[in-house]
Length: 95
Image (tube, rainbow, N blue to C red; front, side, top):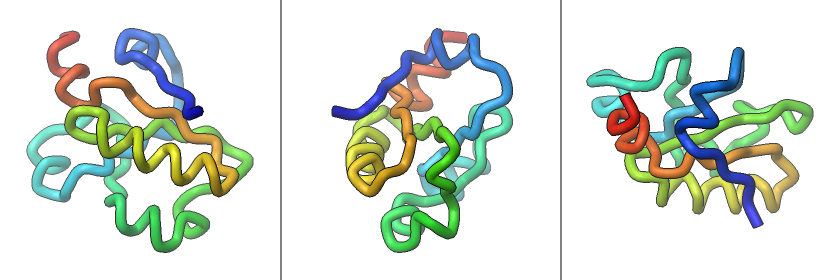
């Protein structure tokens, strides 16, 4: 089971580690403030390069499907990750 958070809950959080796993073009077009762009393959191939097992990371994609899958894999590897439900589309719709 993976941890998930709604966009409304995410908006109430303060300073967090937020990762946008969409492609560079999508990220450059627009993204959630303070999000870092790290693509899925980079996180799958070498998660220890980008993530610290002692920290919590909130991960989102476009619709929340890819980030949910990635969070499951990373969680199984011992990382503290939280999927943002609905992804960037839910973020836009909530504004």
